[in-house]
Image (cartoon, rainbow, N blue to C red; front, side, top):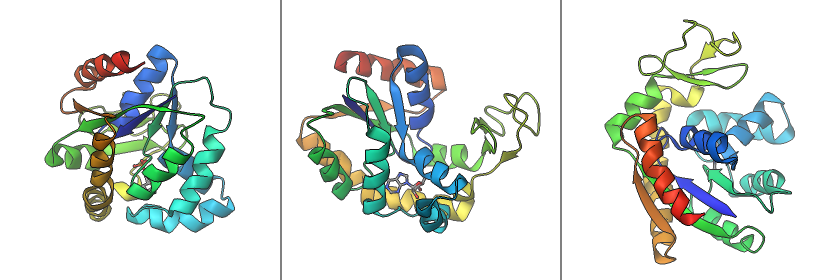
Length: 213
Ligand code: AMP
């Protein structure tokens, strides 16, 4: 079964999904991570998408369908958290078409005010080796300039540069927000206040998730 997490970039979908993976044994499927893996491995898909991703725009629905099918393959009896999909109405409809094998139990909107999103995204640093995520002030690496988990180099994601953050927030408003109404009409929509520290948000989210699963 599927739990969909929707939220603007920087809302904390990935961080919260990681906590649910750790505490409940669910599986996280982040389309952003899957696409970044293609870029790192220089696959045919990776070569096609790198500049679009860097700019903060959406990768094509066709490529997303292919990547989603690849990642969902074999996940039948698990609770799968979809982090970053669907991001537009077409993708929501595509997800409905594969809904037989993986029914959607709920769509959780992690809601965060825009100034907080900008602060989170512009200070984010990620490990170029293991992918761990840090924040320059809110969650710095205890090892300073390098990752405190593996010693890898900490970098700013190209799409976290100020000009690209603006594009991502606009894309979210124009293309992804309508998806919330799509699920409201289906009775699948739930909202969680995503402002605050990670643990407070997790407690609010966990209540909603526990009622659904
Ligand atoms: P994320 O890590 O979820 O912030 O995604 C990073 C980038 O990957 C986005 O800005 C898009 O370029 C691309 N991406 C991730 N998920 C999707 C999706 N469902 N549809 C289109 N592009 C996506």
